[in-house]
Length: 362
Image (cartoon, rainbow, N blue to C red; front, side, top):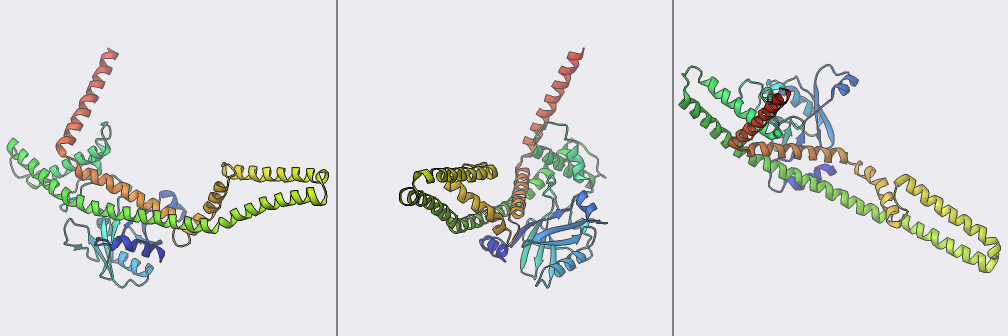
């Protein structure tokens, strides 16, 4: 298990989890080709795809993992919280509820794996007391405003939490002071939660960057190994050149003479040109010793990397997760007052443009 041993170095450093995995979904076209009648999700576990139903229960997920991963006797599914306390989902919990956020798998009571769920979607600040307002619906209301993506996400989350707090106290009579008090409470609550989340995200990014570096190190070590092996290709070229020189010299001055060897040397030169031209046509690179060696290495590199796991897909997943977590980190690092100021500036700018257009039309 090359992949497992490769990442053990990262998990042993200081993290309380073994790996971070990315939950993936089939596209509509893939679902149609596979004739899937309900949503099926999967994640890579040490280069092996683990499938489960998106509309089932936690019990079905646990059974699917035990069936598809060797040596797994017990599976716990937990909510990712901002403290050491772990909230385990009951076996009867619908997966739709679990998939509303990232989750943690605990295998055999010892190994913990973080499953990132919304890598391909804009992140939202999910507090534990979720309010049944579609968070992305608020986010979509800001699409027409020309501000950065993270600004829209932060403000939509702030409004969602503010509406949640107002709904909790709907029996009260609202005035300016009460509204300000609720706003301060929401900002404080978001601030405390965001600080805790930033630390979690920093650890996850650090772990994934370690994975990224280990993958790069693996690739470099395989390239060096292949370069050593492919030195024989250069030796063959050296031998071919030396044999040409020896043959032309021996044939010219010992056996036949220049009258016979002249057309032979011409044909040898043409053959060298054909080989060089064929190399350039295939690689669009000059026919040099270095390029010949690099081409030979690249020819076997992908095959060597894919012997144990899909290197390109693994690296792509790691890069996507890092990009997602860094965006999420920016969301949690944003100051709500700064965000509101940016939104106000964008709205004023848009209003000024609309006013200018109206004046031109008049």
